[in-house]
Length: 482
Image: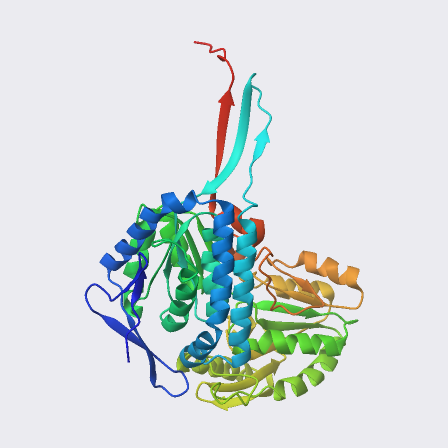
């Protein structure tokens, strides 16, 4: 199998020391990708290339950047079939999830293209006579982007699109679990006509990640860091960024609650929970992991939800015969089994679920209580916990006692009452009568607490990837006291 190369300064090239690593298909175990394992010298070369390209790219007109990003969107869609197959091979994704990734990522590039003319400043009244004060935003420099495997096209494109729109150059560290998928999106964006060095990508062997990431963050030319992934790794990235005084945007883990109020439309709540909990086998940071039912809604919801969950079976995505695909690794599947066993051993009820290897059907566990690991630990897999609450106040308390705070949902026919509950939930995102899993390119996306800080999307993303500067122009000679 040909080895995937690094992409540095507009050229594909092997690792400087010739090393590589492999990625195996999670279902068959067969090696599906061999990729270059970047060295520290390769990482430095990628940053150097981005730094050299920055002056020219940051001075490019908004219209020119817009055209290139629009072309990148079309190029990404043209690569759709290859990307879909790569996602099936490397992470066990279903066709539907992979196609959705390509569609939303293409939209993100279109949205980024629209942002190029929205990077604005303002004039601020000054107390100094004859002075005009400007607040302006300008490109920050080289951006280090780190995207995960679970939604590799959406999150990979998101990590670079707004930085490029703002006039920054980018070095992307691809995921060790989907190097081919990430390489394909970088190639698609670069082929749109971006100048050499504007977009660079390096892949790495898993064991090299800590030293490689620290070298990238520490590099003086890197001015911004963005990372999407686990809270465990996000804390490491945040610490590194703080040590080197680099602003970081961190979008981390979640344990999304969905509160089902007593007046909720049960059928609509079940449909939303089925999608939110099990799309992409529950391997989404916004996945519905906790379904908190209030009072009499509990029994009605659990009965209807059990039927829905039982219909969501898993299979090899290359066969395309089941709504769910494979988990990303056997370790991930084993962890789901451990969480379910811990809960049922402590008195919870498994109302649906099963499977073997990395092919796990959707599972739901009722009457989950605080002493069970499933109550608080992020599962990141196809299992949802039903937690019973006796009142709205108790449901809000349960939702908020999690360390995470990314996405949430509230279901109730009285929309204003449901909105009142939504306002009390500690999360960056909350949907009333909608699933916890929802994303649009123009929305402010991010969390609170252990789910990270900063926001992707729209003008909020512009604020993350630009420097805000104060510049003044003075007419005449001011009075100086000395």
